[in-house]
Length: 137
Image (cartoon, rainbow, N blue to C red; front, side, top):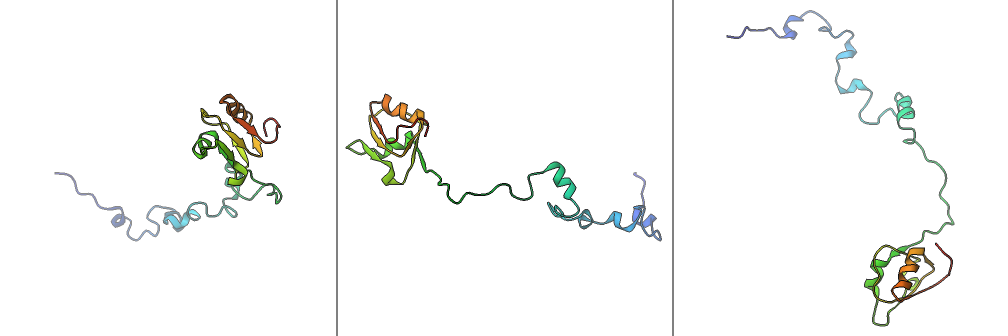
């Protein structure tokens, strides 16, 4: 038969801290300085600056005049091709053609910008890339 042991609480009756030192050392989660990222700008600031330097704040600025080009890949282009084999991407709201995917049918594609691989694949399939003739734009 196992020996009966008295619980620590019973043994420590009359002892204010029950062996934990000062009172604040034996408190719950609340004594740890907040949950999660709490205190990132106060008592945990040095931790964040040392281990997560990009966590706080922003860097640079957002240009108001820069236009984000709306791109489409060759694999989606093939789906849009009609019976006349001509596609006007500017009318569809696209600005740039990218070269991901295969092109087997000859198409005449009209767009403002073509990547070098897209232009190459369109012409290799027997099609035509109509637009500015700048490389890699």
